[in-house]
Amino acid sequence: MKCPFCEYLENKVIDSRSTDDNEKIRRRRECLKCQERFTTYETIENIPIMVIKRDGSREIFNEDKLLRGILKSCEKRSIKMLILEELVIQIKKQLQNSMEKEIPSLDIGNLVMDKLKKIDSVAYIRFASVYRQFSDVSQFIDELLKLIHDNNTTIT
Image 1 (cartoon, one colour):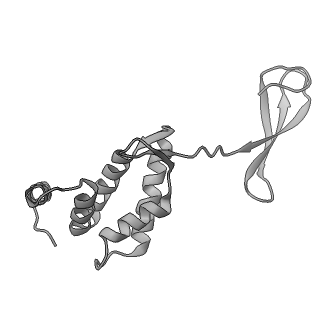
Image 2 (cartoon, one colour):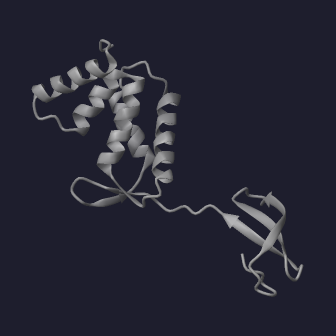
Image 3 (cartoon, one colour):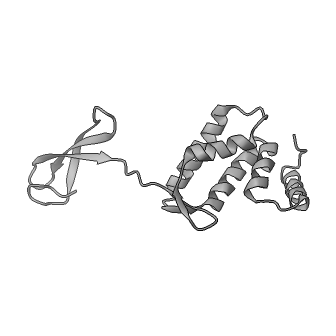
């Protein structure tokens, strides 16, 4: 941070606090060379995540759309809404932390499947059948067998 008075690059933070709307952090700084004080504001940079769809088109990541897709695979299952909302939050954080501006929908689908597999095997199979676009019953059975082998349990 360059001092606005002498343009020296070193300074120290004297005080930090949130603004009234809690959208920014106000910092009082002191230049280590001229001892002048100045104020800076820090904001979160919200860069939208772009999803690259299978057909190559791009759209902004929409967590509501993701939740709707997950809800379809969880219909008539005893999974609390809070768990599914948390799943979407975790996926969004993971995508934001990846620092990628564009993410293939395939990667997002794989994240969902990894998390659903741990929550409910039936919801996982339902999501996988739509997401992976199974073309016949043998693909569906193969996925079931992999799930049984991976979990070493029976499907509930």
